[in-house]
Structures are given as C-alpha cells and as structure tokens.
Length: 436
Ligand SMILES: Cc1ncc(COP(=O)(O)O)c(C=O)c1O
Image (cartoon, rainbow, N blue to C red; front, top):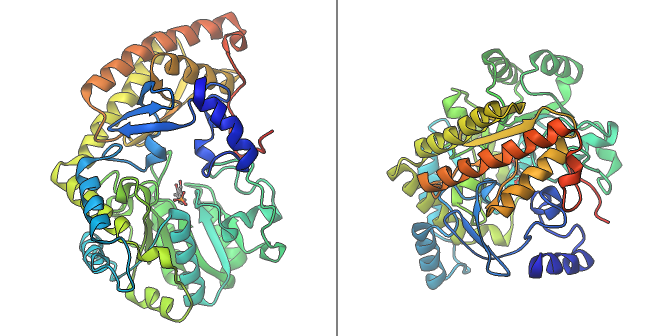
C-alpha cells in the first residue's frame, strides 16, 4: 500500500492505538490496505501520500464536514481569523455573535458555553447538571465520547456500553469509585428507562441522550423522557454532536419538538474545525459560574468563525435539504442494488447519515470485502454514508455504478459459501480492540 501503510506501521510504534480517533484506524476499514494518511482533501476528494485520489463516499471525517473538505467559504473565514490573530489576552467578539445566533435558532435556550471537542462539551454539560442538581447518577442513551463519567458504566457491567455504538470499550483507568454512577438505557425502550428512574429516582442528576441515530424515536419514548425529567427536576441533555446541524438548521430535537435543558453540539457545526458548544436554559447554565469550567484553548477564534460561516452558508444554500436528498439516493441505491443481486441487507439511519449491514453469515468478512473492492474502484467507502454538500450527482452516479458491480461480486461470493478467499488482508474490526 505504498507510503501510507508504511507510515502507519511506524505510527503504531510511536502512537498507542495508532491514531487519535478509533474510527479513523485503518483496522476499522481494511486493516492492511487502507490508505491511512492524506496529503490533501478538497470537496469529497482525498489524496493519499502516494498522490492517489479517492472519492470519499463513506464517513467524511466521521461526519465533521457537511460542506465538504476544505470548504472555500469556511476556510476564508478561518484564514481571516488567523491573519487577525487566533488568540490574545482579550476575548474573541465572535463568542457573543455565535451565542446570539445559536439562541435565535434555539429559542428555548438563553446561555451558551464553548469547548473544542464534542466529548468535552458533553463532559461540561454533565458537570453543569450534577452541579445544579447536586446529584451524581446519570442515565444515558447513545454514544457520548471517551470521558470517565461515560466509561464508568462499564465498571459495573463490562457490556453496559455495547449497545451504544461502540462495543468493547474498556474502562481501564477510570476510577473504580465511579462504579454505579452512570447507567445506560436503550433507544426506544421506554419501560427500561422508567425502571431505571424508579430504581435510582432520588439520585439522578441528568438524563442524556442522542435525539436519534439508527432509528426514529417513538413519540412515547420522547414524551416520557421529557415529562419525567421535568417532573423530577432532572436535567435533560440532548447530545447533538452527530445529528445537530445535519437534518435541519440546529438540533434534531427541534424537529422532534423536544425541549431539553441543555443541548450539545460539535462536528457539523464548524465543518471540520475544532468546536464544541453547550447551549441551555439560563437557570441551569448559570451554575457554571459556581463550578470551575475553564480552558485556554476554548478561547480560540477559528472554531467560532468556522461555526458562523458554516451555519450561514448551510442556510443560504439549503444544505440541510440537499443532504437529505443526496443521502436518500444512496440509501435507495443500496436497497435496490442489493435486491437486484439477491443480497440481503438492512438499511438504517437518516438520509443525512445512512448505514447498511449485510444480513448474511460472516458479516464482517463481507463488510471488509465491500471496502476492499470499493477502494480498488477509487472510493473510500464502508457501510455508512455521511452526506455532504460536496457530493454531487456525478459522484453518486459513479458510486452507484461501482456498487452494482461490487454487490454482484459479493452476492456471488455469498452463494459460493467461502467469501474469505477474496480477502487480500485481514478482516476489519467491529469495535474497540487493542492493536497488536
Ligand atoms: C453523539 C456523540 N457525542 C459525543 C461524541 C464525541 O465527540 P468528539 O469525538 O468530538 O469528542 C460523538 C462523536 O462521534 C458523538 O457522536
């Protein structure tokens, strides 16, 4: 695989785990053949270290870039901020400008704080909720990052987090005294949520959930959570890190007509520049004055201007409906192409972030073969598609043509019963795993 895989082998000796984000490990895609590093990225195109060009019909930096890589308008705003000074002993006025814009989009919120990453923003929201309620227990649904408050749920039950995006997360190093301070409940499982409320009732400081990910929430699920948290004075946090500013302008909770106490954003809000946002009701957010929540890098200007430029451009060009349209075409393409070749797949997610999985034995082998064959055809692709404004008709057409051939091949391999023989390297990982 040329320079990229050579560099990755070196990286694994220098950087534990190889990369900074589990989802960017080559092992998650195509362990021995994934290009691993980029020299340049623009739109939905990515060049590896050997100058080979690929079209990203996969994760677009795990959803960070709704406008596409190196978007000219966002980058212009960032370059301007760099020229004027990214940081100083005085604060960036864009902190106030962005706060006003976010509150206008989310009229239920009155105050805003910033961080640099999604996980940090969630940790701030949890701190605020615990400070406000003086209660430690957290009920959660979905993925919320790497911090101690979240991983601690795996101290009491090794598999607690397995149904929440990433299986196998190891809580090693998380203080054992945090055992039994956070508990998961499954999406759309209202009875399970109510059971946890009954069991921990007086100890619960916050309920945190993603508004949706693979499936639409049932009305009863949403209404019960909103009603109970309100009744018991529990802080309700909606984690919009993956869904926010992707289905509509602002949080997906607006579409679901949910009114939380706090909502948290990152990723799509700033098109790939580091940014985390916490918005909330004044009476809850004010407590952030009484507990210490502070960091030098949270004062940088570039995340703020990137967010302002991303939100404004997305609105101006109707990017949110564009994403629904492009992503919808891909999801339909998966379904109809699979059907054509007699391949059984399960399609899930929203149009903006769609997923499919093979409903045959040796799922992971088939997933790896899919990525391998798509890569040979010039695509960075796996079983998820994160739509972006840079994905144009021509990319979709080319992708669906390639998909037709690849699904035909996989259908044949399934029928023959020994798909492994087509692998040119090892099988991709399904979740968190120590690297050899
Ligand atoms: C819903 C949700 N919350 C939190 C996070 C963590 O964000 P970050 O990776 O920026 O720390 C993610 C990341 O994928 C996410 O999807």
